[in-house]
Image 1 (tube, rainbow, N blue to C red):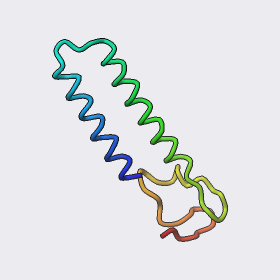
Image 2: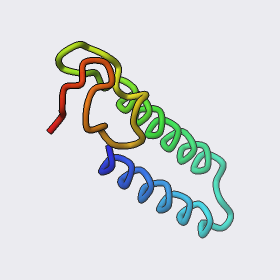
Image 3: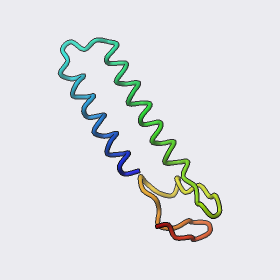
Image 4: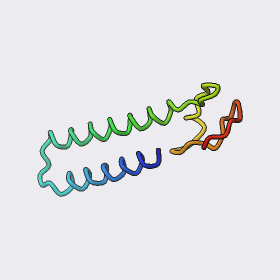
Length: 80
């Protein structure tokens, strides 16, 4: 998740720089960048919140921020 987060932040930064320095910005480029960034963020959120414990199936995505927690809250299994 941390790697995905870093990739998204680099992409968002590059797109913002491109849009800022393209003078004037074509409307289609603005909307394309906005759409791509929205899709990337939505996919990242989906991946984060779909993580489940391999033993009990508990959704562990809500218990951690951008990284896997060290153990399951429900069954206490340790993750590598």
